[in-house]
Image (cartoon, rainbow, N blue to C red; front, side, top):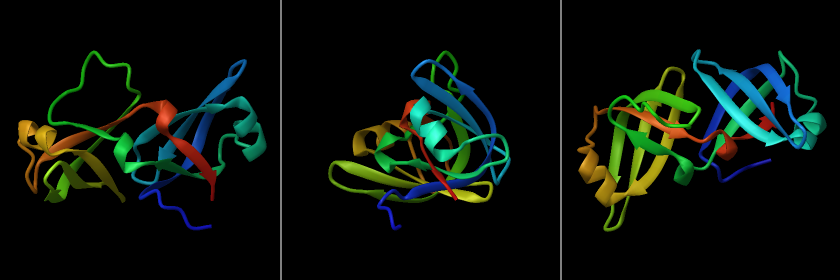
Length: 139
C-alpha cells in the first residue's frame, strides 16, 4: 500500500495502555527516540499491538509544529529533536525538512511562523506532535 503521508517512522512497540475507548501506544523509533500514539482501543486490538510489534508511526506534515527552544509547559507528548536540512519558503506556507537520528521529518508551517522562528538550513528544532495525530501501521 502506498500512502501520501510523508512522515513514516519505523519503530517497535514498547508498551500498550488500554483505556475504555482509547489506548496509548509507546513506540521506540529506530533512532532511539520515543513516540506516543493515542489510537482507538479497537484499532490497537485489530492491529494486534503488544510489546515487540514492529510498526510505523504515520504523521501528516501539516500536523507537525516546530519549536526552536525548550517546549516546557505543553501537553504535547511527542518532542522530536532534529536539524533543518532544507527549507522551502512559499508565498504563504513553508516546508521544513528535518533530519533526526535515523529518520527525516517534513513539517509544513506558515511562512510567517518560519520567519518568526528565524528558521534556516542548519537550525536546531524540536518537532512537536500531539499523540492523537499519530497513526500506526504494522510493518
